[in-house]
Amino acid sequence: MYAATMDILVLQIFNSLFYASVLFLIAAGLSLIFGVMRIVNMAHGTFYAVGAFVTAWLVGRAAALGLPAGWMFLLIPVGAGVVALLGAVIEPLLLRPFYRRAEEYQLLVTFGLLLILEDVIRLLWGGLPLSADPVMDALPIVRIAGLIYPAYNLFVIGIGVVAALLLWVGIYRTKFGVMLRATSQDRRMASALGINVGLVYVSAFAIGCFMAGLGGAIIVPSQAAVLGMGFDALILAFIVVVIGGLGSLQGALVGALIVSFVRTAGIQFFPEIELAVLYLIAAVVLLVKPTGLFGDA
Image (tube, rainbow, N blue to C red; front, side, top):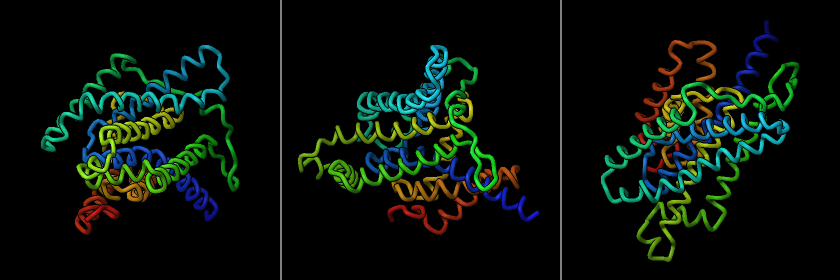
């Protein structure tokens, strides 16, 4: 009985880290965009869905052409890169004219973008699910302390760790990170100091979209890309940033861990109220610290 309980606990921990890695990518992109541009991007979950659909479609075409399964891993950053390019086009053309408008306009335009992208997904790929199974099948099943676990899930956990480290280095240890932080704190002063604010904005938005697209690209080998998946991801990402603090990289990481561990345990032990528990945690955090655990006061 004790051994079985420990096995379940170990599996829950690994599954939680797996979901936390994906959630962190989505929430970190959302927080980065808000931290630099002060825009709550309602379409962020749909960028995640676009990354999933593009990657699944590319893997399907590669499999049809007989490309070795190992090479298909290269399609994961390609799928995320497509989303980054999409973000780099959308930011100057659609979002930039609304920076000087009230926040309500920004919410409406990003919500409209969400609906448009959802219909574009339906137009391009129809209503049927798409999967990228060959990528997951390329890695074996491994044994951890006597337990059988997919090696691909460990690969995703590794991507989450590397992404967190690269983001931290990029924001706090590079010249570009200094420009990002300067622009987020005072856009006019940054412009007066010679920083190309427009370039910083489009770069920040593209990186945030890349993070969301990467989340979709790494999840689609283990679960199919389906219509509406962006809405679910957006809800969970908002819960993460509410708990951790919108605009905080550290908050996105801690919030993703909290949400994933609670959600994994909830699915296992109390599935009927699993989402309600997450909302309750977010509400308690807002009552105690309205800006989130690591948000700026």
